[in-house]
Image (cartoon, rainbow, N blue to C red; front, side, top):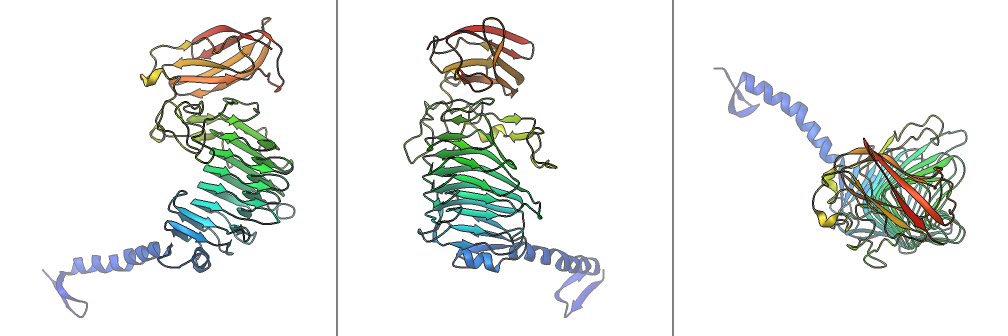
Length: 437
């Protein structure tokens, strides 16, 4: 066997081994080094988040260790950056009431990701006390707590598209985020969009105890060229209202109620006013949906197809019950309506509503032994459709939905007898309920 000796290597290699080793050094090692360099750690590499961002190159990711960082961050004009904290409960960026916590200007290019932080104590007389983001393209905000920030519009977060001659669109996903204690002197206490062409998808988000001087204590969507879709979320105790503007909610608990599939109004039973985990008795446990498919064609922006029709598709390993919970925190509990967790039902069944008679809210419970497309419709006694309450694919399990005695136009209905009908595959059943006033 031929071996190579000399300055190239002090150990003996066959010629083939030497060639393969040389190839690996020339190809794998630079790739490995590039991968390592693409991640900057705080405070290991730089003491502050601002220094790390300023040193980053295109495509870099900034990883921040647990701790409290008192900073007012100006996002650099560098494309495709990610800012990743160790978790919202342990990694805090505190604006110290000295300005916005994070400002992303329109010179930065997408995609943008910020996750794993508490963003708190931001204050400005302008827009966006916690964060101001002005850019187009894809924006991901996840695993965040946005608390105790203040601004003129969008006390917690404002996203501003770049319209006009730029004709850009901002596509925002907000997932597993808590907005609490934020205030806007104008509109949008927790979250607001402004300028042109911003669409937002909220998934498993909690808005609680936010306020605005004008409208949209929770969410404010400004103008006809914006909209938001809300799924598996909770809006509660936001002043003067939860939502202003164009918002399409699904499987969400909204104080005051908004028409839509799977929505209801009920006290979510948080642990307390600052801990937004759910108590075991919460009606929001197992009240979300693992699969939400909707027709977006009627309200998407011109030429927009970024979201698709499936807006929620949750792996069952993520949640513990028969369905995901509403809100940012997945509870370890199972809904008390699920017969104490005795597995899946054996047969399809529509239960009597509770309470009955009722005024103005009642709960409809139904059992699905297998996954099915489910429709639940409310009729008056002459057979006229009053409310299309459910029309979606649902997982097998024990399910419930609330009806707040409103019709498809969101108007209160008069007292009297109503019928509710379920169809799930070949299963059809109808029962009677009485509304008192």
